[in-house]
Image 1 (cartoon, rainbow, N blue to C red):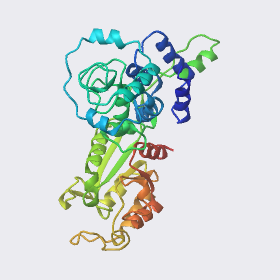
Image 2 (image 1 turned 45 degrees about the horizontal axis):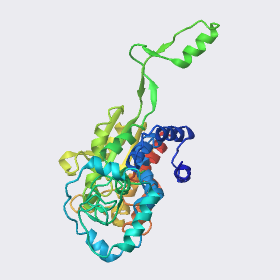
Image 3 (image 1 turned 180 degrees about the vertical axis):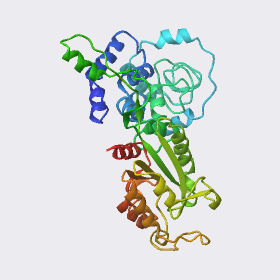
Image 4 (image 1 turned 45 degrees about the vertical axis):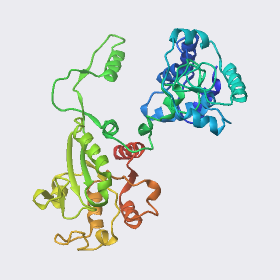
Length: 396
């Protein structure tokens, strides 16, 4: 049953196993899916393993089952009636369920075709014609356990309407991030090493197997110290100007980074458009709350990994000229691109995350400065997938 749906999911890259599909079929056989809404909930729970795939599943669900609730060739006059909804009239739910509950889709579609041929005027609150506020199999704002909604908006939470809302589109790997998704991505920024201090109270499974084998099968437990994350991170965030439109996104990244307690060390600094002689400790970028970039290079050794977050879109003078900085009273003594190169030379593991969509990097505003920065630092789009690819490159 629904084997084409299984192949459709696999065709579009969703990793649905045969075992999971057979488990879903078992749920159907046991009567756990008495309607399309329940089938939607259970199939997503069984088949989809990552929130990043929820939106793709919803799109494919709608594509496959769309014919169940989509009706073509509805006269415009009738649709106008149906979009002018009337209040729901009183009804006996048990009686309606008993009367209509056994109809299958083919029967309902045939009945709809007959009603469309017969109906010549508006009807509301009834159980036979297309209308609103009643218990007919067709219409909207009423109740029927198996009906086809025509016009209006869903009131009783039907599967197609729920899937069509795409509530999970923010979890798609090609979409931008929120704080929770940042946190999930930062968790992958790990390089575990055995600590040099502390009690040896963690079982070393590999050594236990080896020592047990060396003793002809006599169990020899080997313990070691807990492993610790060795990753130290510098986060540089562009603040102000064209980055104001991305302020919410950058704030989410900041909050996620601050909550990433698994990092061995985390330093966060700010800059405007490009970093020069000084980095700032707050997004306001005040001179009184700044630190010399040379101090950072001299005191934060090259084992730090660096993530720069900014749109890299600026006047070329800000990037390539001495004194080209946009802040007139704080001219730069060295060009911005040279500072970027100095950081890249010091920190080999360095990436740049850009909130501007990748499709605009080559022909959108600021494309020249973006291109020059990309020639120095590997740039990724500030999306779930982009961040994960960037973190993977930092760890390689």
